Each structure stands twice: as structure tokens, then as C-alpha cells.
Length: 175
Image (cartoon, rainbow, N blue to C red; front, top):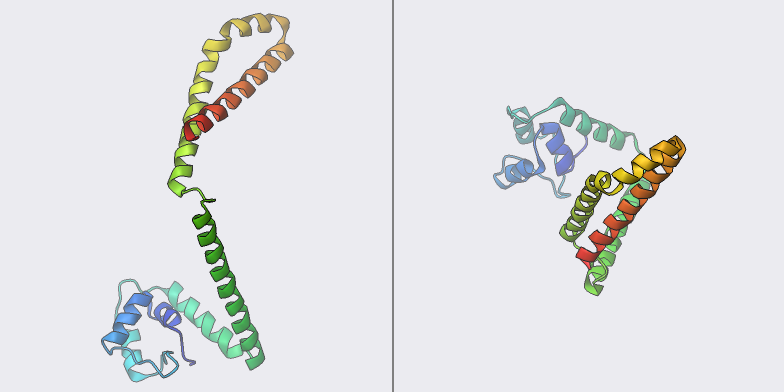
């Protein structure tokens, strides 16, 4: 069996990575020089055989898939996979840097502020739609006598105006 990362070992053991880290600190799990864990090591077998309430077949299957994928890869494929992982890490780091730059420039809006704006917009839409019957009841009676097409046009126009007013109300509160 190949050596595993902490995450893969945790999946095999049916526990979290923090439990594996604690096991390493308490010398219940043996780690090699490459910071990998050999599940065949007697001490690690004891850890794997321990009864844990969070152990699941799902974790074991995921770890076994990772092991078999690694075993089946050639050294060239492993290098390619490592390069891909490095690229993903670099992209994530670049994205973090861009976000920090935009935050420093003041170009980003805080999540809570966006949620408040959306909540205000939703409340404005609700309020304006609830007011529609009061605003157009007389007009609707007159339009209903002209026919369905005229009534639909009037309703569409009033709905458009209610949405436009909601946007303006929400933006005024935000600005």
C-alpha cells in the first residue's frame, strides 16, 4: 500500500484531518521523512482499526480511489498531476492577491452590505406590488370594459413602473 497524505489517511480512517494531526502529536500515528503516512505500519494499523463514530465507508472508498489512482500513474503522469496542482495553487494565490488589491482600492462591497441592499430591494418590490391594487383599481375597471388586451397592457405597464420604483427606492437607501 502506498504512503498517504494526512487527508487520504483521515479518509481511510473515517475521521477528520485534525484527528490525524492529533494522532501524530500523541505518537499514535507514525509519519515518515516525506511527511507521509504508511497505513501498513503496525502503529498506524492500530489507529486505523480503532472504532470511531465518524468512520464511514465513503471516507474509506475515497482514500482507496486516491491510492489506486496514484498506484496506476507513471512517474511522468505524477509529474503532470503535480504541475497541474501547482498551477491551481498559483491561480488561487493570484486570485487572493487580486481580491486584497481590490479591497485596498475600495472597489469591493462587503457581503453584509450587499445582503442589506438586496433585502431593501426585496422589501421595496413587495411594498410596491402590494400597493398596486390601490393604485390601479379604478383604471383596471375602465380597462376591463375595453377588453383583455387593454387590461394586460395596463397591468404590464403598472408592474414595470413598480419594479422601476423599487430599484430607485433600494438604490436611494444604499447611496
